[in-house]
Length: 32
Image 1 (cartoon, helix red, strand yellow):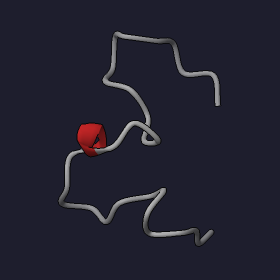
Image 2 (tube, helix red, strand yellow; image 1 turned 120 degrees about the vertical axis):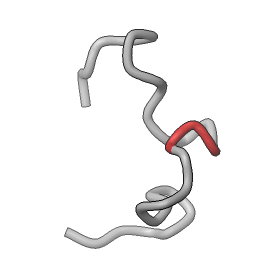
Image 3 (tube, one colour; image 1 turned 180 degrees about the vertical axis):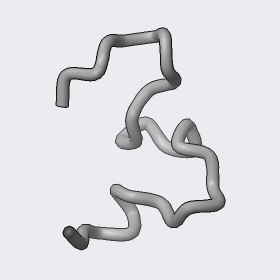
Image 4 (tube, one colour; image 1 turned 60 degrees about the horizontal axis):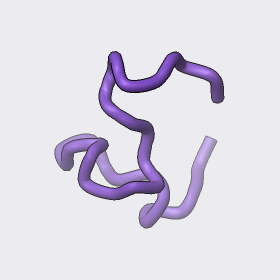
């Protein structure tokens, strides 16, 4: 429900683009 664009990149850029974004699937189990 909303959030800073720096933390949550728009749908189009890879989530792995920044360290703050969620890690690639398989690296760590979904906890947050």
